Length: 89
Image (cartoon, rainbow, N blue to C red):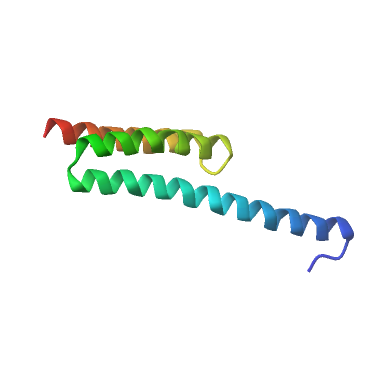
């Protein structure tokens, strides 16, 4: 348990930051899920629209420290390739 006043303040700050990060991560995952659902349905137009909405959310999560930059880029790349393959099939 925190003993000093500065340690108690840090506990409060960390709790608040954790809540913000949890919300950002959840929002990003929701956008990714929408893309995956559109891909599963086979609708390329819907999946492209969902990807266009998800890409800035994923990159925003990277800029805020939720994900590493390369992880975010990899996620976007893999989703984009899946959407592209849907159009070629």
